[in-house]
Amino acid sequence: MRINLLDCLARRGNTFTLKEVIETFNISRKTLWVILSRLEKQGWVERIEKGKYMIVPLGAEKGKYTLNEFVIASTLVKPYAIAYWSALHYYGLTEQIPSTVFVQTTSRKKEQTLEIFGINYRIVRVAETKFFGFRKEWIEETQITITNREKTIIDCLDKPQYSGGIIEVAKSLKNGKFDKDKLVAYAEKIKNSAVLRRLGFLCEFLRIEINLPRIETRNYLYLDPTMPKNGIKDAKWHLIVNLDEKILGALE
Image (cartoon, rainbow, N blue to C red; front, side, top):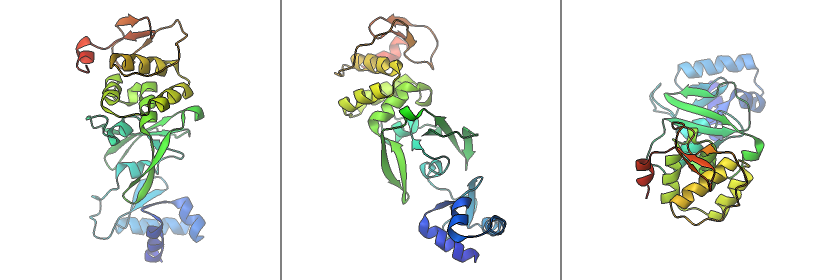
């Protein structure tokens, strides 16, 4: 029974949930707990978090095998998208390797920070209006959802604290290839004037031609909210440029 169940699950993918097994195989929760407990002790499955498991392939050493972190992330919350610094790194837009996997969602999750198999995960909840701009990628025979290049940049401008700071976004804009029209459309759609201002300032600084709408505001925001709160005011974009001149100069 245990092996037959495992074979059936393995044909469906490399992860599963208690709910999926109960609904598919018509097994009582009590019986399933017993089966899974034995399979886990024998090294056939490994618990990801409550109610979620991965299948350990034949020949893998118990306690040392794990799936790709993006595959693990895809099981943590629904709906989801790999986003922010994690997506920047996936597209090769930053040389920095984030120590955390960032997952964007519209759902509530009690635990927003988790450590699973030695990897840190950060669940970032956003409004429905900010949840768009995805693509599908295949990783270890699993299709995962990730923000596309343009949405990744816009998300990082929206929440720089999850991207390694504005400087990483600036490097990405300088070195990456983007659809400028899509960048502008996304910047407007996300409905955060800070995104438009930061994008406008960085594109102007990097001499990237882009057609952004006029900024109608009197208040000033920090270019990088993760940095010290002092700097020079930029009247055009209504930003306080709180990045060291040496840091900005290195981008030119």
